[in-house]
Image 1: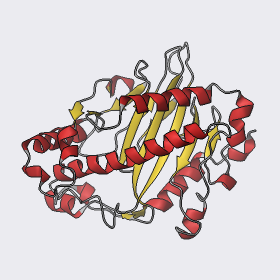
Image 2 (image 1 turned 135 degrees about the vertical axis):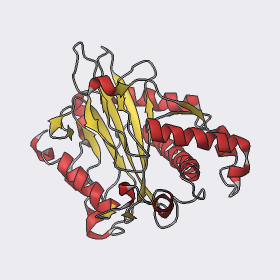
Image 3 (image 1 turned 60 degrees about the vertical axis):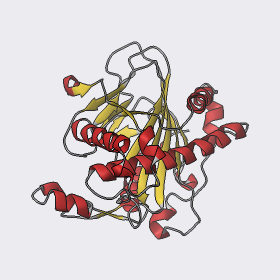
Image 4 (image 1 turned 90 degrees about the horizontal axis):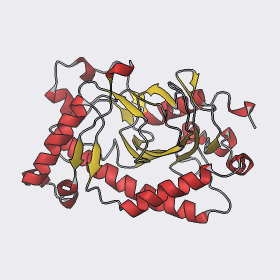
Length: 305
């Protein structure tokens, strides 16, 4: 499988898209049309791409990574004060080896966060994730920084999806309204210890199950490996940090509405009427799928301290 993982990804300047992001006729702009063409090609050929001209300052992105490094450098006892538990809505810190991918332990530690919501908003299904995100007691600066970063990532995700919506042949707003008018989000703040041996899996091969994932990672450490695939499918990827240095990655997952019934968009069905992927044998409620994934991943959560 490793021989098919591709280290080189397309780089897309999305600034023309952001300038016109609130214009329903944005596709008439030649700059936007070029961005849309590149998004379409990247989503078909690889499923991953770098974005520049995204509007989030380099200084903010750098500070997010610096403060994340600072957290993971804390003594284990300090990190454990915000330990992830079912009672905390599966929010908080997890030590190395707690996360499982496809039944195998991953070699990373992390802070898991979810969009905060009012008690009872999502009924019995949402009750599993009710709670507040946990941050170190002595680091309100970190919380404030991440709140700002999350807002910017939310806005950026919405605008990128407008471009992807155009690439699929629809209006800019196909991923809004009933499907994503009130988007849920997940954020994993991940630390990968450096190792001096090959094939220590930081995070096993998997596909993301939301709409769009934004990755902010250390620039000088290559670890993400991506398997190329077909039309707008979630791309298989994994993390192997063979470098001796510690690596951090802040992954922001922009999702549908929590209670959205997920199925292919009507424009996809119309554009690809003979494609079996447009015929869904079973529709899925996003929140139910997320909760199932979380509870499966952390089935052994109560066994460590």
